Image 1 (cartoon, rainbow, N blue to C red):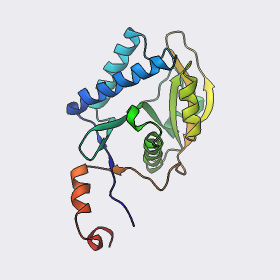
Image 2: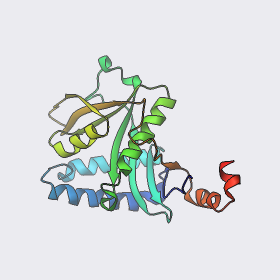
Image 3: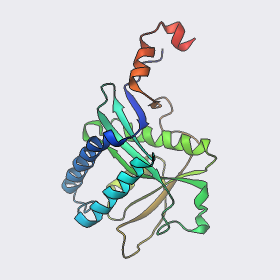
Image 4: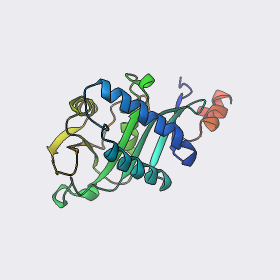
Length: 203
């Protein structure tokens, strides 16, 4: 029997900015405890936040919420980063993900992996072969996380003005957690459906 979903993915809007900034602040604090310098530079962080706000305004960011609307995670997509990916990589063959952040209370639940599965499905529907990421060069823990979720290291680029550059990609075919797809849309709509007779929901 199918169960009612408890996490819901929807486009992020301006009203979500405070909650998303709180997720980032929590992630920054946690990263400091892990001995990585990621996001520790105020100037770099300020530029990243400005770009993130722009992606929200342009409809390129999503938020994953619980049934009460509380933010659990976020992810964004964006254009190919030409500091890292070149014409020989076939830039148009991939969807580029940025700013995957999961609330610490959801760590270890597989929520991040489910978000990555959703992104791969979107990329496949667009006719793309890959989901690509770039990761902070010194954050080996995060690099290992992506490898556990189906990504393969392509190479590491080290432009002097960037601190990211560990490049990886994952094929869009297949899902790491096929039995736990994320519900997409308004939580209230899903919950109203769950109150209908089972024959009405599942036929």
